[in-house]
Length: 475
Image (cartoon, rainbow, N blue to C red; front, side):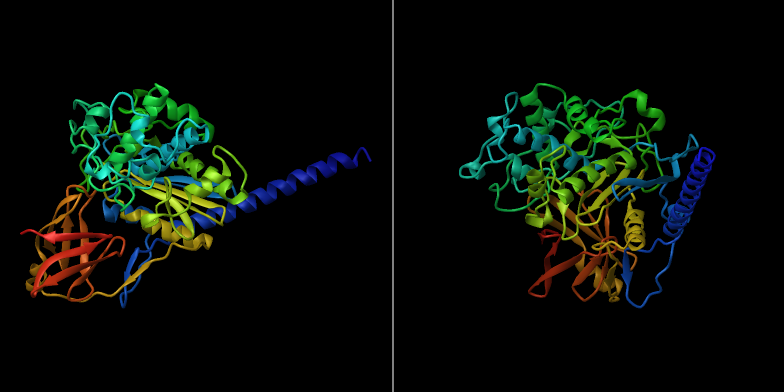
């Protein structure tokens, strides 16, 4: 018997090794299929659908690098980088390369607000001015009956201005958060422009207001509060909300790039609006946020947040936004767009799968193509290519739609002819939007497929409807 025990132990170890090698081979084959199975997000009927290789696609699109992480069955199944973190330094993207997460900072920051509510320190439905001590949101005619609350900030129904932030360059004078809120930085002041609760408008300004509320309450710096209460408990110990990015991270930080291939000034922007746009992280760390929220939702057991809180967080409201994440029938998550960076986090409600994709470019078009490949490989619902029909219009016909338009609460938009369609340009949008005609008055966004419908009055173009907004033509 004594001689048999070592033999059985050896047989067990060999079996485990063989199984491990087989599992790794299957995973390698899966990753290879993904790397060679990218398809365009918007697919025009009648055209041949190509398959792309990820490295070749990066070069075609002029995107320096991308990093991906996938959680499967509550484990980090794989994480991998492609392309260049910094072209001038010949530094490759790895799984440890840090990226700016852009607006994915919002749902992560929302966790701290929910924790304060769970602790009874705040009420999500109280006037935020009840908690602000060093600065107050000016009241006006829109706040006579309804107030700006944390709940409304979280789901973008607070009626606040300032869609997003362009960031600051190295060497710029960085404003304080109250200065940002008062329009003394490089954006308009954050103010109430419509009655809170009656409509939806995405507002990074609202999350910056929430950031200041949290620091007023706790009397500590926002990065410190987020590190100790959210990031470290999630296992995101190598992530930070600190802006400017501390020098200890510089050697592993990706450099941001413009669409034309130029580096962002100072290699990356600086965001004092940290809750809205300032998180530095890696896909393999950021996906841990998705894993935690997903596990709480699926198991109905308390974790970093209570199960009741997460259920409320993932209940979609106006425009499919919950209390932090965007929420669909099958998924929750958020995308991000900082200067020189694009990112997306998506997790499934019923399947134990989540992914994060991050690029160091203003061009994030490869993200959706990677999402499609992963969703197809893992058999996941809710992520499918958009099918559209192209309707050819002459240049003369396209010119009828050109000119300047204004969107209430956002600002001016310009439409110009580009190639066989139109380009939508706006200072508040992270990048121009290319539109192709699908009829004599309806166009679609070639990146996401959303329709834009032009409005005619007396046989002239008077405005358009797009993404739930209505614009009026002014020139």
